[in-house]
Length: 247
Image 1 (cartoon, rainbow, N blue to C red):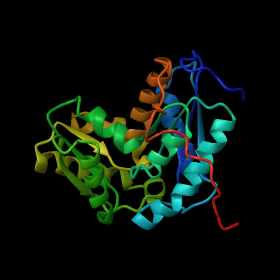
Image 2: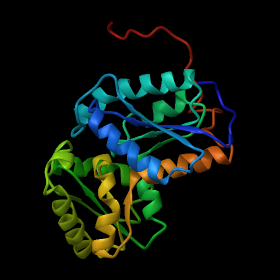
Image 3: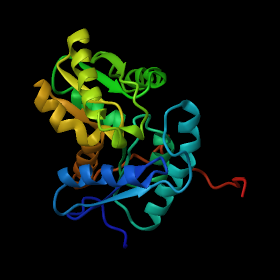
Image 4: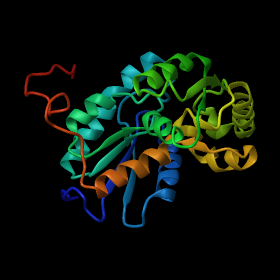
């Protein structure tokens, strides 16, 4: 793949799955391709190293080297922009230092998108232990004004694709969340929930935002505008130095 110029009419966007489960990557890629322009090449990339799923602070930390390795490879291959497809947005700031084009995390994209759709949104995530991380991100992104609650449906990430009752459980959790919080919209707090977005929205009658598709379209739009992460100060390329990677 040759390097493309910013604002290219036919950009390439990589959807990076920070876990190592290829089946999940395939589902995420399908959802991203469904909303991207016909001229945009969407490629799902499974992390080469890291956990099978990301459900804790430790999992996120272990996932970051794989995310950065994927960004480095994408830069060599001339990729125009990236989506980090995990709701914890692992490695986002470091990825922005490495990448020339835009990089978005799905929590960041989903929360900002939902903030345009009403006065408040609820987040429905997987395990209860991830609720605090979702609140941290809402505060970090300045979304505390809009985020009215974070709720867990207590489904492990990988069970979202294998449990036949998963969609009903997530739908019920979304219904309970909007009633409890008085929210106008729902943010789905896991990339593995991406395919559930439309049917849940249709059943509940409120906007339901999936971060994979929201981030894909935002990255595509930034590329079209010829915009990438500023390299003036904080997100400049890291200074050259020796790194010990352990093998």
